[in-house]
Length: 454
Image (cartoon, rainbow, N blue to C red):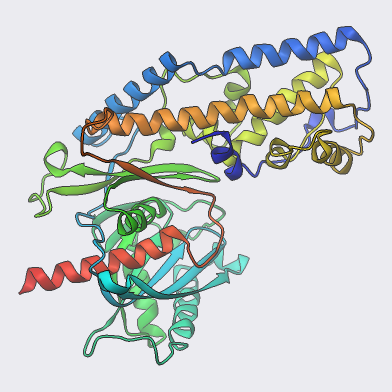
């Protein structure tokens, strides 16, 4: 996983530093100013350093926190949420299944025709729907009625080649990427809204129950077979493609990881051990923190001024929501100490491979109207992007190593494979891993019920 992995996800904020809102046009002809700028870059590089020894310390700390989070509720910064997903897709799944992926201001509905091992995903269709802003702050009934109505309209477009088994109710995998306390594979109480939603009467309610009632109100006969978050949906999709996949990581605006744990290794699990012997764990690893994380004064200042100071520290050094803000703060420091300040679209500039760094120059001109920048200046900007993004990528890799250490899979054994499925960003397209994964979980749970009842 290289620097591009994290930086594709880093569609970074371009807000101009309030204290430096006036465009600065200094060219840094003065060697003294260049020396100060270079000193800031060197200091940042040292503090963001991720040598192998430090990465191993981060991985060890991740594994320790995973153990603590599995031992008891609140025992770790990692929530280690029991998902109630104890069997993942195998490829044997057959039939017509739907998915609803709700994770922000848009939601996606998908229809997947599964053909078993011979035909796998025979067909899939999807549609994206924008949620009107007033519904994000309205009532639970209004929001879920809107979603259910859109889902019904999508179902009504079923063609003759969509085959529902005779006598069977349509089944839905529901990807709900907001904090919930899950009580079964198909039930979860909303803890709080995020991402601009604020619907008070939905908090504390079972979101599956709310959706089910809305589907009944619009006359849609459908059962929610699985409630999952996007990370678990990505894991399910990965397992369907490759039986060696044991974990999934989301690297987007935020970040998270889920993996397959041995059920007997979860002390806080008090129910009967599942027949599969496995349980998928939603780590909520964005909240991981350790004294071994290479944090700078820029990270610390950003954390203090964030909406959740002291929380989501790991997320704040590896995810797209924060990387551009870190860069902005470094440049603000240069504005103050070296009369140097530009606020770029970090991702575009980081991927500028032209000999004269033309994209970097264009961004500086378009955003802050600074024209005719020198190649020397552009190279300095790219170097800052490299430092911040490489740190994020290497720390992400250390987190993944921590998962493998917890499972005892961090060393290569003959004949044994362990693969990680990751999702970079979450753009709407027909191959959306978390959405299709939710449909696959609905299918696998449906098969599991049939076998269990026979």
